[in-house]
Amino acid sequence: MTARSVEQHAQHVAELLATLHERPAEEIPLGEALGRALAADVHSPVDLPLFRNSQMDGYAVDAASVASVPALLPVLGVIAAGPAGATTHTPGTAYRIMTGAPIPDGADAVVPVEDTEATDGQVRIERSRTAGEFVRERGSDVREGTLLLPAGSVLAARHIAVLAAVGLQRVPVRPRPRVAVITTGAELVDAGTALHAGQIYDSNGIALASSARANGAEVVSITRSGDDPAEFRTLLAEATTTADLVLTSGGVSMGDFEVVKETLTPLGAQFGHVAMQPGGPQGTAVVDGTPVLNFPGNPVSTLVSFEVFARPEIRRAAGLPPTESEELPLAAAVTSIPGKRQFLRARRTDAGVELVSGPGSHLVAAMAWADVLLDVPADVTALDAGQLVKVIPL
Ligand code: AMP
Ligand code: MG
Image (cartoon, protein in one colour):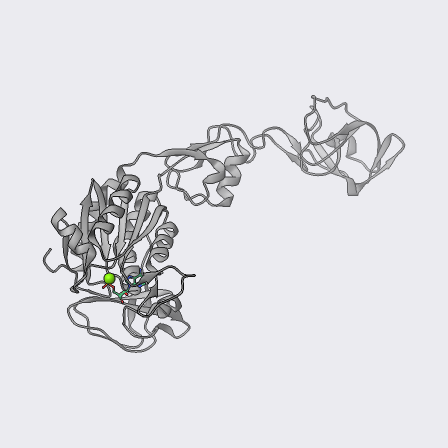
């Protein structure tokens, strides 16, 4: 791969990941659908409310019988919310009724209990009500056949609520792309392991997995290889059996033990430099039919690579809306290296966007303190205070 611009590499990655978008929709239980994107329009199979029912605890009456108050009405019975047979209203009488209970046929209003006084077998109505008051009509919320939620809706709790209310048990959703993560580096160990000299904790595995999940992917495995090509090749073969996309970190630059580069170059992978900072060294491959993105190992480079190249495609495959960049004023002047699109860690403040620490791609704490990437075009080397700049929300 010759040197590329970010835009060229993003285009190349998008083409490589076209397979992510080919997976068919799936039907899943409603209880597992939070955050998923509907794959089809959902129409209501029923009216809501399902039947005419009381909005209050009180007395079901006909408005004419309580037109002049106080009115004394015989109480024919009690109707609770729950399984019940049909009841019929007789003008001049009342049923005691609970919220959500079916209104007797012929009754047209409910007098809330607060406006009544029960006496032996009778109720004294203190306040008149007009027809329809405190009656929830069948279908007054939604009619059978009406579009409840359009395809593409990302299901929040309120969407799940209405789908449950109309009795749907399963919903059609976009599939979650299955992502496998492989980190590489002889220096890496798990948290909880005693550190020997020269060792560091592996942060990219969990970071890439979390990034993938946060954008709608299902993470099928997180594994780690030392700098031995055979070990990496074995892990990669395993990953490609279950994943739609494999993300790797490390081993792609110009050092002596670049395990990813060494292993994948003979398999037709492309490695090269993208005109960006951080994240310059990038690789792509297709292994056993599965696309593989090879990100550099510095923790900030890995995360920025994910944001710039993997995030848009994973979100699109999962049916999630793209992350929109924003234009905000800059708090203080910023300089940027020429010839490279720079993604600087920054945060929003009342004074505008300000940089968090320097451009070093090992500054993982500064990455955590940032809430945006300041996106500086390759041909821009200086930005002034107050100038509107493009930022990518993290
Ligand atoms: P590499 O891209 O393999 O040359 O790694 C670049 C830098 O990132 C080195 O300082 C590595 O120790 C560090 N690094 C690589 N992989 C990880 C990882 N999984 N977690 C944390 N740091 C890493
Ligand atoms: Mg390495």
